[in-house]
Image (cartoon, rainbow, N blue to C red; front, side, top):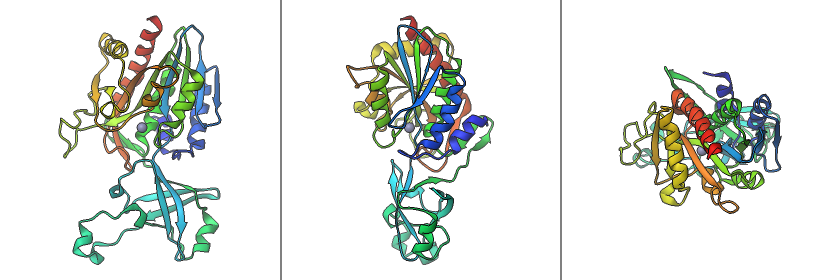
Length: 343
Ligand SMILES: [Zn+2]
């Protein structure tokens, strides 16, 4: 796996705690852009080129995770969820508490089946009844190592499953950050192009709102992830996206509560894909939305397109994607922007 992609997947950065991943992205963008800054909100905003049109490429850099809420007398740590996580993915997970004093490893505790009542065996424990064990037996001992409010991430685990099929923590949306960085690196158009890594997407598309207000682009291209349906238990009518079938062009999010991509942009992106033989799939979804949903209704309305990487097991400790689909995102991103600049 590419080193930059691996570093991005492994970096910590739950919503609001993006400093470490922001620093990696900033350093990388500095190699290809004219300027890079981090704004008050925590968004990384890079700029490249000159021209009449302003283009923004946005990828959110925050990941879903947990935060320390309370430590009991026996030294067990209780937490809140930051972003959408199913309680069912938490029991038994290895986590890292990113403390000011360093990394603290912990295990989310589970009740062994030997001790469960028949009723308990069929139920998922609610996250507020779960706890993290860091091997300490007293509250005071724990608070010497960590603080209330510290971010908690799933243990980094990036790697290759088989061929082009890769996995890792925070694929949503470090894969998108990787594509944004690569597009900024390779793109050469007569336009002012802004590559933005947005903060706090998972908790309400917040950084996209502030950064797109500042940039005020003529066209915004979002790169994010979407749910693949090529696994047991998901019917084609729920999600027909498959790994390896190309990058998804998202048209309608959350049954229309999210972005509804404008017909002109839809046509432009499909043409860009067809003219350049870039493998793509179409994505229309009942649930879930991207930064596009807030950007396209910002100011007086901003033309917005969305590229989504089909991903298995979104918002779990490890998600799976195809590297070729991510390469297709970079290629289609570039061709789409080239087309928009000529419009
Ligand atoms: Zn996302």
